[in-house]
Amino acid sequence: MQQEPTKGISGRLPARLWAVLTVAVVALVVVIATTEKRTEPGASYKLDLKPFTKVDDKDVAFRQTARFALNLDDPSALAVADSGTVYVAGKDAVLLLDAEGHETARHAVKGTPDAMAVAPDGRILLGMRNHVELLDATGKLLAAWKDLGERGYITSIAANADNVFVADAGNRVVMRYDYGGNVLNEMGQRDLKREFEGFVVPSPYFDAAFDQSGELWIVNPGRHGLENHRPTGELVSSWYKPGMDLYSFCGCCNPTHIAFRSDGSVVTAEKGINRVKVYAPDNTLIGVVATPDDLHAPSDENDSHSPVKDLAVDKKDRILILVGPMKAILVYEPKTPGDRKP
Amino acid sequence: MSKENKLGRRDFIRAAAAVAAGGGAWMVSHPNEQAFGWQLDPRKCQQCGRCATSCVLSPSAVKCVHAFEMCGYCDLCGGYLQPGAKAQDSGAENELCPVAALKRTYVEAPFYQYTINADLCIGCGKCVKGCNAFGNGSLQLQVKQELCVHCNDCSIARDCPAQAYQRVPIAKAYMLKTLEKGSEPTK
Image (cartoon, rainbow over all chains, first blue to last red):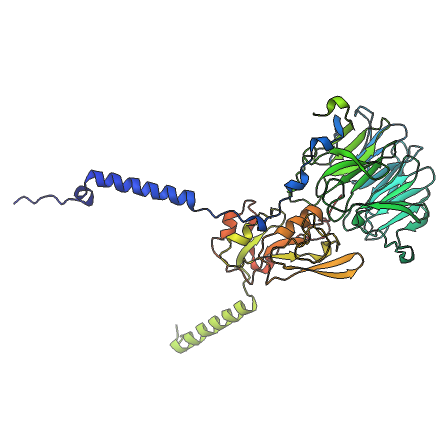
C-alpha cells in the first residue's frame, strides 16, 4: 500500500496567507525600527546658548581684510613692535611678520610662551609659565628672571621704555619689573579702605595693555571690566559691564584680552560667547569685530578655552586677532558705508 | 602508592573546604578587582540631557560632580545662574538647575562655593554646559557607581551622541578632569 507523503506547514497554508504574514512581519520590523527611539530631552534639561551668539549685521562695525596663515604650532601670543613688525609666539619659536603677513625671521625658543611683549628697543619679553625670559632683538636669550613660584602663571606682559608689567593669573597680581629683572612693586593687593578687592581671576585669562597715551589698563576679569592703574599700583579709574547682552562681558571672567587703537577705543575678546568687540573711550560699544561664526567657535562646544589666543593693533590701526585653532591671524578694518548691508 | 600516602575522602573534603574558604577570603579582601562598570568621559560629553532621560533608573545614576580644585568660585557662575539672570542670587528664577540641586554658599567677597545635592540631581548636565562654556569646566557628569545597576547594555551609552560612555574597572571608576600636571587649563 502506497503511503501518502506528509504535507509540511507550508503545504497546509495557502500562499495568500503566507504573503499576508510576510507583509505583517516586515511592517512590524519597520514600525519597531522607526519608533523605538527615545524622545529628545525637553527644553528644561538643555542649555541652549545659540540665542546669545547671534549678532545682527548692523552691530558688526568691522570687516576682515586679510588672513595671515602661520607656519607655527600652538600659536599662543601676539605683539606689534614700534617698528610695525608683527611678532607671533608659539611652540618652540617666535615668528616675525611684515605688515602683509610674510614671515621675515624666526627665532627658536624653548617651549611655548604664554605671553609676549616687544620693548621699544626691540628686545623681546616672553612669559614662560611662571617666569620671564628676555631676548635681544636677534632672538638671543639674555636673561631668565626669577620665577613667580609654583602658582605663577604669566598670561600677559606690557612693556614700555622703563617698566615691564607682568600679569600673573596664578597669583592674581601684576608685577612691575625693571629691565634688569628686579621687582619694583606688586599690584593687586586687596585694599578695602579704597574699596579695591584685588584682581578676581577665576581662570588663566588676565591681560594688561597700554592705551594710546601710555596709561596702563589691567583687565579685572571676575569683575567683567577694565581698570586703569598707576605704575605704583593705585587704582585711578575703572569700568565694568557684566551681562549676557552684546554690550556687556559675559560668563565668569571676561574680557580675556584687550588692545587699544589710536583713537583710544579698546578692542576686547571674550570667551564663552567667543567674540571680539570695540568700545569707545566713554565705554559705549562701537561695534562687533568678529562674531562666533567668524572665529569658527560656536559656544556649544565642550571647551572652556578661548580660540582667541591674543589681540593686537598694528601701526595701520588694524585689529589683529590670533586664532589658535586656525593657526592664523585675522586682520580687521572698519567697515566703510559701502560694506554695510541695507 | 602505599596505603599511608593515600588521600582519604575526609582529607580530600577538608582540603577542598580550605581552598574554598581561602579563595572566598581573598575575594572578600579584593572586592571587584576585575569587575567593570560604565563611566562617561567628561572630555567627550556634550551635555545633551540624555543622561537624565535614558537611564533605566529614575532619577538617573548619572550625577553632577564638582572638581573643586578647578573651580574659580565665581560670583557670576555660568553653571549656577541662568544666562541673563536679572540678579546674581539664589532666587529660583535665576537658577539654571531645573531641580535646584546646585547650592551656592558665600565664602568671601566676591567668591562663592558651589556644592551638589546628589539626591536632587537628575544628571541633565545643564550646569555642566554653563560651566564649560563660561567657566573652567569644574562641574562634570559622572556615573555614580553606588547607584548604577550595571546593565550589560547601558541604555544611556546606547543613546549617547558623543559616544562618551565606556567600560572602566570599578576600582578606578571615575574619570574627572582635574588640574593634574599636564592637564592644566591653557590660555
